Length: 330
Image (cartoon, rainbow, N blue to C red; front, side, top):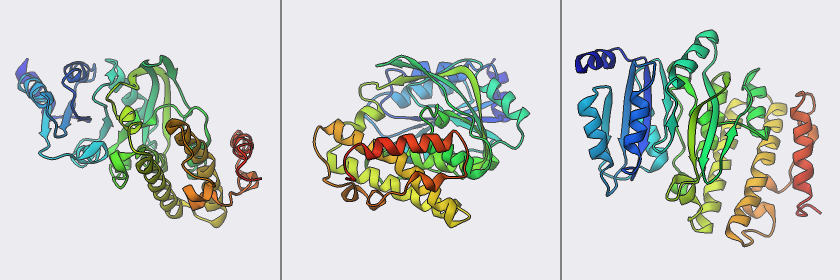
């Protein structure tokens, strides 16, 4: 068995990237599901961020039994964004995906998504439906991010149900450049610019089958930790997030018309999140939207999306009506 696993490790086609931190309570389960994939030509990289528990020891014991498992033990804290980036930089296989340390993979996840990409040779990646368990239980689905660049970006920012493309299987030659921004405290919502860059890399197919399970709002988890941030750190983190996406828009848009449409879509995506921050902290974090970010000072109108097609134009009108109903722009 060990010799067969060594052969598989030597001809891996997919890198499984597991950023881990203080995960000794569940990392054993996580690795069992990674190692138990029906497609087994894998390189399973686990980067254990500096912590005080036995996560690294558990990963080491798996690596002793399965040469496909590679332990990277960090001497100092990278944070979740830095830890993910560390792993992406080490990908040397045609495909990769991020597998978060407290999630669950169904055995056929890798094979089904690889088969999907084989049928869509020009796509950058493919993602599946996701089952959320823990604090809430529901199925998270979303659209296929297809069409031209603008269509994909607008779909990401305006869709009410986006699914979980962060957990997509990706082609290394299309998406190997992706990195999470690290300029916000605790990597606060660093996934948002990452996702924008991901759908810009190429079409993202959607498989309407639950192949991945996410532990939602786990106490001590990443999103739970964000809720504990001081309000000033949360606000500055979201501002940094918006600035990074505005920079991406400048790089990606081919015309001022497209740039205007994307900035307006960003406003419509970020405004409810800005409101959500105030509700989370139970206090007014700003008296005018402009105090939060200059993008909110004088928002555009749905006319910015005229001509980009349905259902995006209707979504833009509905979201704009919600923003205006908040009373900031009387």
